[in-house]
Amino acid sequence: MRKPIIAGNWKMYKTIPEARELVTGLKEKLKETDQVEVVVCPPFTALAPVAELIKGSGIGLGAQNLFWEEEGAYTGEVSPVMLRDLGCEYVIIGHSERRQYFGETDEMVNKKVKAALGHKLRPIICVGETLAQREAGETETLVANQVEKALAGVAAADLPQVVIAYEPIWAIGTGRSSTGEDANQVIGLIRKTIARLYQQELADQVRIQYGGSVKPENIKEFMAQPEIDGALVGGASLKVDSFMAIVDF
Ligand code: 13P
Image 1 (cartoon, rainbow, N blue to C red):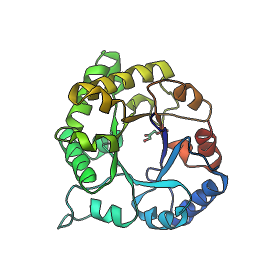
Image 2: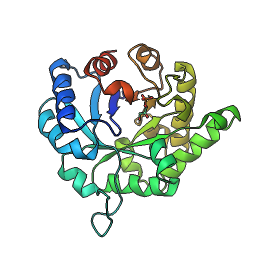
Image 3: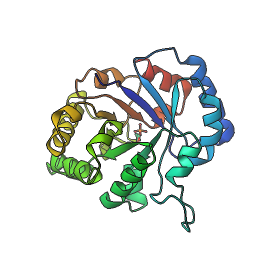
Image 4: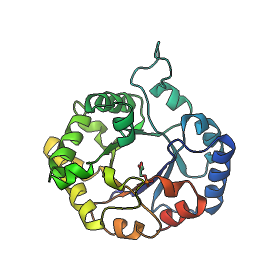
């Protein structure tokens, strides 16, 4: 049985006082439950204060990016060692915003995935198609290819640590989510791809989230799908009430 994981990607939102306020509110409202794993991914600047506040709360901590080297002359970058040092357990890798605005390629995503795993960080690997690619019928080939490239050289033993987030780009921040059925179909294909690359038994252990305009109103539809193991939530993770309504789906 895969334990669902609901993660909040705060993107470039929340100063330290705002981050403290949000996570304090989440802590107060989070019920003791083993049903769902809850993770927050604040911006780098708020990781340390959030790490302090969530100690013992059952909320997990994730970063939104990393660089693959451990240290060195890489101005502006943050290493996996530094993220571990801060208490991160997860790291989002290859978000479409990073691919689109910061030139991240599948090869860079792969290096980051391997660096994360090499430092006992669990990667949340984001994949997904643009609207044009969907309309051209390219979704399945593109997504399978992204998954295959992201996992190149990843050992089977590390695979259970990997989380994949299927985030169709046209659904991110647009209010226009995928349907549960469509997302389930693509996520099923991702699982088949992993089974082809490794083996079915391992593919069955990998958690695959849906992301893209997830809200309290549609979370049930996604969680009811057999292949969908949780959600990566952007906008709706920035407020206590909406994120808790999603976690308590
Ligand atoms: P929204 O939930 O704001 O559409 O963002 C989704 C996302 O990009 C999460 O990583």
